[in-house]
Every structure is written in C-alpha cells, then in structure tokens.
Length: 84
Image (tube, rainbow, N blue to C red; front, side, top):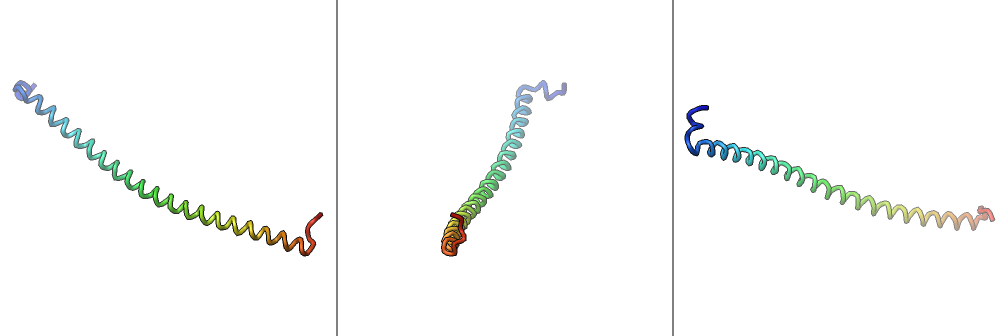
C-alpha cells in the first residue's frame, strides 16, 4: 500500500471520483440511447403516416374494383353471357 492509502479521507475521495466517472459514463450512454429512441420515434411516425396513405389508397382501389365488378355483371346480363 502506498502512503496515500494511509491518509484519512484519501480513500473516500478516490471512491467518489470513480463513482463520478461511472455516473458520467452511464449518463453519456443514456443520452445516446435517448437520441436513438428519438430517431426511432421519428421513423415510426413516418412509417405510420405512409401506412395510413397506403390503407387509404387500398380502400379506394377496392371500391373501384367493386364498382367495376358490378358493371361487368350488368354487361354480362345484358349480353346474356351469364349462366342461369
């Protein structure tokens, strides 16, 4: 053991310094994680917006297909192309 280990209070200050450094590292990592989560949140908002647009376009396309199906059925009946 060195001389500093025998000085009262010296051990406590070394421990406090180590704890402060550890806390600093943890806070740095937490800030990085927060930034990453914020980026993911923004990406998720964009994905949800795009999904909403796709759902709307699908619903519109589905309605158009239903109308076309009805028109084709009427044409087939008029031309007597349907069975029974």
